[in-house]
Length: 349
Image (cartoon, rainbow, N blue to C red; front, top):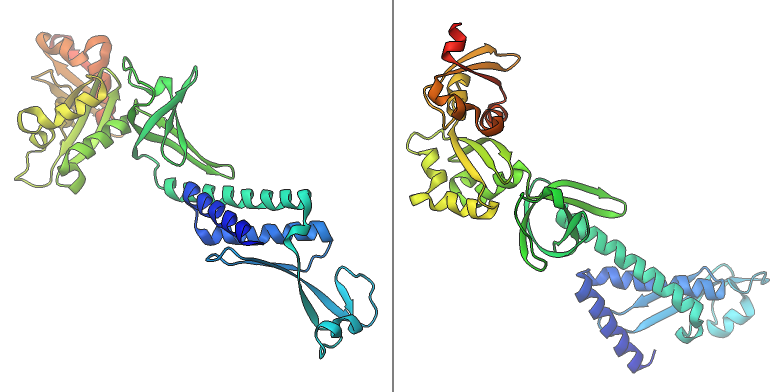
């Protein structure tokens, strides 16, 4: 290669490395393999070797032929007489190395070289993406809304895109193309074709990760988030507790003048959040979970089957049930108990 070609090669190589974020040695190795593949295709000689100097860009391509007494295949063999014209003391059975002209490949060979390099770059890029995202299941990510179709939004996560189905956004919210968006990884598949990332803003895990992001006590473990029950866009219940007597878990979540919980509420389109104190006693926990209803008597009917009866007075019955049964449904999901709410007078009868 002349100096101009070497300079062009180095420029192209550096551009690929910068654009794809790939280790330089991988691209160099791919280039060497590509040149050998092109040489084999052009000449039919399988004994080729290529070295690329990463500093200077100099490419050296050479072939090897075995020294024989009688030549049967001149692609891979050379006679002793011809070999000794090059290396005087060479003997039969040894190999002789010969530099090859890089300009002798032609368009077909050049195409082969390009295909091999492109394939290796794709493989390296796929491996990089897999390595970056392999531990992101159930995590919160930030991306850019890049495009949409009838059913999905596509979120640019840097090196790859995730799919945010339109039925997995918070009901009532409007997302704008080009805007930054927080998303929860609800499903992550790593296969031969690369990484498939399914996203959600409706999943209860989205709320859980938002709370952990905004409230330090959840991150350091001084306050524990026991469970989350969510109807996205409408209402959620979270159960928290602390094993430290000097920490108020409810106060830690709410923050001074509601500052912490308000930061979370702004990110979930005005969805209401009931903050419930978890208790090891299931009856107490169920009574807490049925908030804002008060004066509740809870009887555990079957601990194994997780069945409970909540007895309330007339004033609290509609609060315990909630609009369209929402409050008791969320309380059941939060506590993992099937809760039957009855008025005290009905129980007596």
